[in-house]
Image 1 (cartoon, helix red, strand yellow):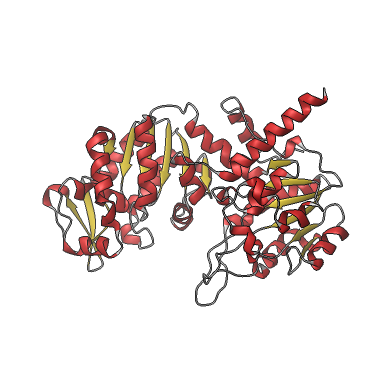
Image 2 (cartoon, helix red, strand yellow):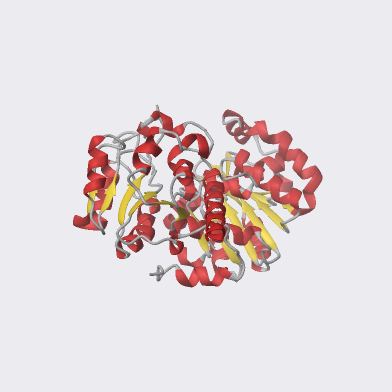
Amino acid sequence: MKNAQFAPIRDTLNAHIMLDFLTIDDVEVEGKTVLLRVDINVPVDQGSLRISESKRIEAVRNTVEELVYREAKVVLIAHQGRVGDYDFLPLDQHAAVLRSTFGEAFDYVDDTIGVAARERVKEMKPRDVLLLQNVRFLAEETLERTPEEHAKTILVHRLGSLADVFVNDAFSAAHRSHASLVGFTRTLPSVAGRNMEMELRFDQHVFVNPERPLVYCLGGSKPDDILEVMKYVLEKGVVDDVLTCGVLGQLFLLARGVQLGEKTVDWLTERHYLDSVDDVKDLYSRFGAWIRVPVDLAYNDEGKRTEVSVQNLPGSGIVADIGKNTITAYKSIISKSKTVVTKGPAGIYEVPEFATGTKELLEAIGSSRAFSLVGGGHMLSAVRELGIDETSFSHVSLGGGALINYLSGKGLPAYDALKEAAARAKEREVESV
């Protein structure tokens, strides 16, 4: 069965993208034990240690329900947090959310590769869904190793021996070469789940002969990551305009010698954002013709929104958004685009007075006729908090670090492992003819 919701999207992109990996359409799963790697790593409140609702947990349904419909026994492996961090937790809360979704067919075991986990896997019946304990509780999981090295781990040996098929549906962790992401691809038939497939199809749509003009609208508060993306697309010559806002826009203004004001500079200095100024200057000197910078800014002046044109800077307070003239100019460029990638909000959207830039740019992207890719957790939060219809965009990615790696031309080990698994499967098919 094809996922009814996903099929029209997949069929639309099929003519544009030739897949170099296998999907769950390519394997028989009836009565089989399917090891499904998902990413349900979600925000955690530091005080209560309660997990937040997340689209990542919701998205698990896409692949699980299809596998259950096809009479598979589905074993979920996942992680939460990092060793030593406050959000490094067991998956009890995640299990409670998933149980409310899958009902009596769902079970959870507080074990990953021990006797309890393995015996429970052996007892499974078709249409059962089982979540194992946080895979990062195993020290060998997070060692950065090759798929060949991970294939020799206890994790892969113990769970792989009980499974018939490995499905990777964790695109947002695809930039990690961890055991549960790449190790099973050397020992089991390995394919992409629906979320992984959809993410890769949409991301490739931006990279494989995208319709031009192609516009990147980049902001947020992580300039290092965004600069990597900018550098890659500008050096490749695959972008027509880069619209800068957020901290990134402020850094480009500083690189041009614009005075933002003492409070803003102090704020940027405290967070080490000014460490990126040399890289910003280099990019602007080489690609200034393609880089758009704000023409006015909105300051937080004791709680009030005060807009100041670049010619009249600095303003008082701290920069908290782009101004209306910048918004108008950026919206005009977006309206003429055929493909838009946006990553990072334009300002402090959590405060209503400074949500204007983020809201209007997202609305402009959503109402345009362009193919649109919205990336990052902050952007998803902004879309929801600002009441914008998610379906107005072609795709809202859950990728995070994986999306940044992909957009900046870096490898995704989990994706590479799936490609290699597909190539080996094709070789075996040819040899058997």
